[in-house]
Image 1 (spheres, one colour):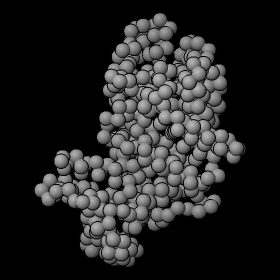
Image 2 (cartoon, one colour):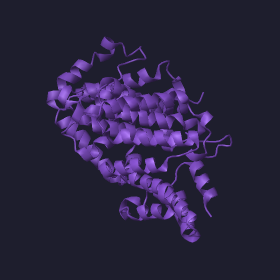
Image 3 (cartoon, one colour):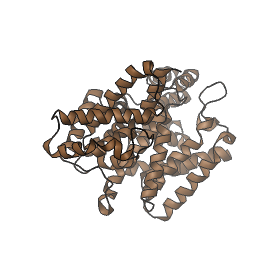
Image 4 (cartoon, helix red, strand yellow):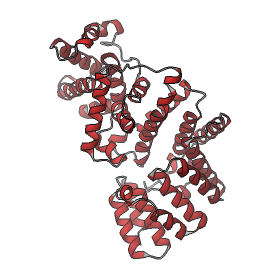
Amino acid sequence: MNVQRVAELTIRESYGRLVAYLASRWGDVMAAEDALSEAFLAALEQWPQAGVPQQPEAWLLVVARRRLIDLARRGKVREDAMETFKQAANLAQSEGLSSAPTFPDERLQLLFTCAHPAIDRGVRTALMLQTVLGLNAETIGSAFLVAPTTMGQRLVRAKAKIRDAGIRFELPEGADLRPRLEAVLEAIYAAYSTGWDDVAGADPRSKGLAEEAIWLGRLVGQLLPEEAEAKGLLALMLHCEARRPARLDAAGQYVPLSDQQVELWSHTLFDEAERLLIEAATLKQPGRFQLEAAIQSAHSHGVSTGQPDWQTIALLYEGLVQQFPTIGALVSRAAALAQAKGTEAGLAALAAIPSKPIKTYQPYWALKAHLLKEAGELAAAREAYQLAIGLTEAAAVRDFLQRQAP
């Protein structure tokens, strides 16, 4: 048995649950993360000699809890938090954590805590990605086109805000809950996208992220069954997830959606996504995730029938960018316009996108390379392909782009 591998997998799979559990009891995300880091280091030092414990997750939790109690005893906590720390001294006995492998999963509470109005709106999604899903500042910064050091500083300030303001770790109720929903859904989708981008599933940083995101999406949907956007997000993720088995061929090469074998799709997930989209529409609360799910539905139906309705897809993207002009939506609209109205229309839409955010945005360069190739501008296409290849982390996608380059 590879002890280090077991430790790394336990850390990756347990991080969000452990941080949420500890932080909800100590009211301090940074202290919980620091204690958990020490527990992980202890595991890497002790498990190779002593062996992997029967319940590794419970072992990590107990060690981290002891670190927090030691911190309290050394007087390195706020005065108003001391009583909580003292009460935690008997936590293992009262909850049976020293021997039991299970404990309450409080990630959803932590998600809504990170979306508190006192937290700067611009950092809420990033904060959730780090605390609940364990992504590092570099990965998060890349997703938000922000330097890792800048993102790290923002995250530290946000965690300090939670601690210093005494923000409670609990699910808000009624009118207080819904204003936070948008940020929570954004974080869940960002987590799913990170897992989805790892086409071959080879990157340990994104392992399990798609599954965790879908699990959280289902949880939010159960919590707020009358929220159309919660249903829309889950429909969007399930539409994508249904196609995952067809993204690579038998040789491990990337297969674009238009060339995928429909029989390899999960029709169970596809049908569930369609049902959720219909349920969302009946609530008459239009929003971004419903639009994106409708786009994915249209794409899937087009591939299934062999008759993609590019006019409808382009129209849906137009509605999306009118309300939510993200860089991803703008690039995708350009792709749809190229199919609906011709290559020149697609290139014109790309040219209208502001230059700053597209410098390191791989999908922009991949699409531009393809359209330039279609337009016969081979030299410019080769240059764009090289940029797209250089910005691609997934080996299967990189190989695909190399094969497409003129």
